[in-house]
Amino acid sequence: MTILPRSARAAAVIVACALPPSLALGQTAIGRAGADMILTGGRIFTADSTHPWATAIAIRGDRILAVGTDAEIERLRSPRTRHIALDGKVVVPGFNDAHAHLGGGIKATNFATSDSPTPD
Image 1 (cartoon, rainbow, N blue to C red):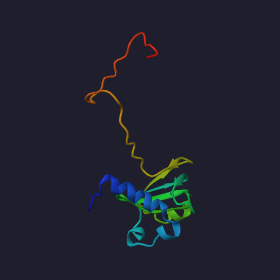
Image 2: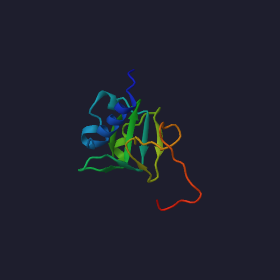
Image 3: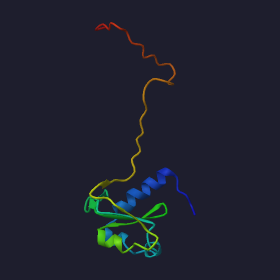
Image 4: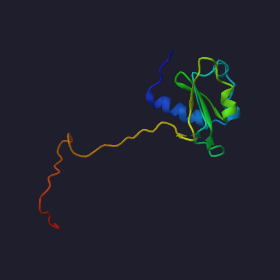
């Protein structure tokens, strides 16, 4: 099994979520094999301007099999599939919170403060 780097997995999630359900459902051998996990009853953000939201998602290994309606995704359920009922919760593609906090460890930076600051 090939493990994708985190950035590649995030890109795969975004691309897979962008597929319309008609393209994503049951069109591949991996889709016919069943899902390891399905999430239903939620709001799945797809990033597809023509179909921005779905209600369910199917996952196998580190890949998204399909995004669609609860009924469509339930067809990918097998006896070994883990099911998570989202109860209306939102699922979005992975976020990369790339930012830094100033101070502590940044060289040549002094954030000294004074007890009595002046307008200068």
